[in-house]
Length: 530
View 1 (cartoon, rainbow, N blue to C red):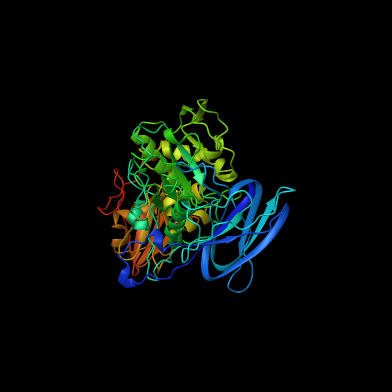
View 2 (view 1 turned 90 degrees about the vertical axis):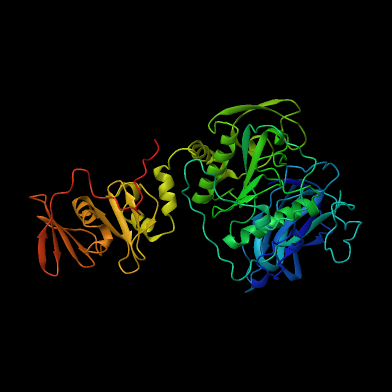
């Protein structure tokens, strides 16, 4: 990603480990986020690597300057054992905040993990004049030059080191579910929950009309973060956008992390009446959502991709916009789009930032997956598709076993329900051709065909046999399967099933024409969407 870097500043945010169990009810504020500015003096043309350290740990780094055209930058962090982490590219922010003409340019902040030292590799055009220190020093105790003060301009480049507050040690994270009722939005973490300062908001960005499109972004930072880091990353982006770049609030309407967590973005912009500032030239008609991470070379996680699709499907549906449609949008012009003022751009109703601006956003890999986002958004109000149900199973033993035996091509076929709770600590999911049951004692076991029907008619795992403890054993005449308290045997010649418990053999009656009984706590199979 290229910027023009005649002047740049690096901002580092240190980790403020001040949360305690006794203060859990107190929302974190942007004021808890620490920013430190370190000018990069003496950078000329070509590639220069600078090492920056500070005693207070930080976890995110950004560059700012008066002009970042033609410059590239990479950042890497030193680990506690002295080794260096991977290089992360920085990406210039092309959306500008309100009244931003005299404000500094900047890159998206890069999450590098907790560290006290980073190396920054800056590549500038040949013959670029050497950078100098900004004329205005940071006020005592603040650590950075506020956006309301004199900003670093032409010959200044600075690093901003950003340290969000650390999550309390007893923080518990519950992963979002991939399956929600048709037409129901994903759970959204409100600004007060992730720690936004309630005083930070845009009072001069009215937005009182239906949206006509959604724009997909990425935050262009590391993908190597834990779920507990995400709220702090959003806090840091807010602090950087407002305190360093001088914007009135965070630019995006919403953000989605790689674990499927959704964060409310700009205050009042989730449903209106406040406009976002995420896509230069096209903010007045669009709703912007950013995936937390960098997707130039790797794909968003399945749940991240699925969640952003559902989120956009929900928001577009409120204004009756077809996620698979197209729209003609007039450009507001400006330096951050290649569509001049009043030019009309014909775009998909879900498009990418790069479709209208000189940016890689949302990354090459994510850009290739936009059709998947559109399909998910289009199915927002319909029943879950088999791929939605499969996604909901990911991360569990049932999903892993299903994949091992062939996934959708296996004897079980596609899933027809999400994972559910059975008797005791048992878990199960139903499939097109049977079911899979898991418990700590038995592991994941497949039940299909006549044996499954017979076992179901006996009460599933609550019956006398208990849970399955093996797969089927295929013999010339018989198909056998073991259970906790006995076996079921299917006779290929007669089509009958016998039960054996404690050596007592009992032939079971033929299955009911209506199929096995469905216990109250069991999910009815979902009819997959077409």
